[in-house]
Amino acid sequence: MNATLRPPLVLRAALTAGLMLTLGTVASAQTAFISSEKDHALTVLDLKTQAVTGTVKTCKRPRHMKLLDGGKQLLVACGDSGQADLIDTATRKSLRKIGLGEDPEIFDVSADGKTLYVSNEEDGEVGIVDMASGKRTKAIKVGEEPEGVLLSPDGKTLYVTSEAANMVHVVDVASGKVAKNIKAGKRPRRFAITPDGATLFVTNELDASVSVIDTKSQAVADTIRFEIKGARATDITPVGITMTADGKRAFVALGKANHVAFVDVASRKVTHTVLVGKRAWGLGLDKAEKTLLVANGMSDDLSIVDIDGAKALKTVKVGRVPHSVAIVE
Image 1: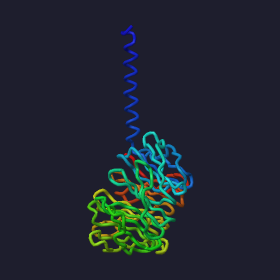
Image 2: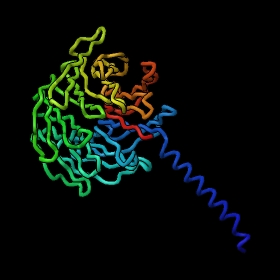
Image 3: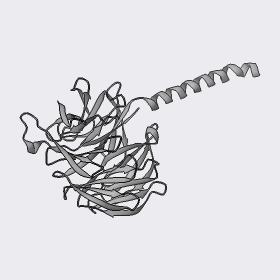
Image 4: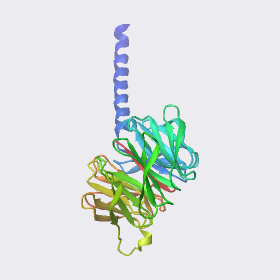
């Protein structure tokens, strides 16, 4: 009887091993998640085939996203739900919801994964959320219409933009108090910081510029201005920004100008501009730093940009009003 049962058992073991290998391959494949504000969903894109493979329903008006636990989880902030949705990236199922307060915009999470910091635009506050309990434990008053939120690499400083006050607020994490206010350009929005924490880039939506802040002196050291041939300065509205892992190159989405700018961080010079879709907004950079994904909020699509060639290769429809991009590899 044992001899009779052995082949099926071996077969089942082989099939199980094969299934596990297949699941592992799927989980580690290059996948992009794009939040769609109007569809209350995430669009799923296979980066190898450059095709949409499905959608993931989430809370209302998903916007900013951040990968956690080495890409195993995706945290999505939903503006109209006042909460974040924690999603398993392999199963694409919601694990739990976390309250973020009124009208959450951009957030960051401490390196140990214990604390979340989120801008609450209508309240003019940065909310502090305990990730384990999912409870909002504290709020820090900042300027009106806060948006960008970014922790310094050492986790000691929190930077927050105030769109209405045209300021960057420097918050001491230990005390939970604003240590300094830095005057930026008109309507500052998002951040990128070099790996050493020495240089902070801030996009200024209504100034066609990026403010470069020296974090040692906590002052603006330079301003990078953008020009697009045939476009008025008022149509150049930088918002989204990302940076290479070595901090040598930055990419800036220029909003209504329908372009992305490539910036050399050391020289603070624009090296290339690439035509993409309408209202270039959120950006995603793959691990190899060969491909830039651009969410275009007014054309409801995603531009796939070849970085070495500095040109858009393909446009993919990804839902209504795409906002942010997160890439799992």
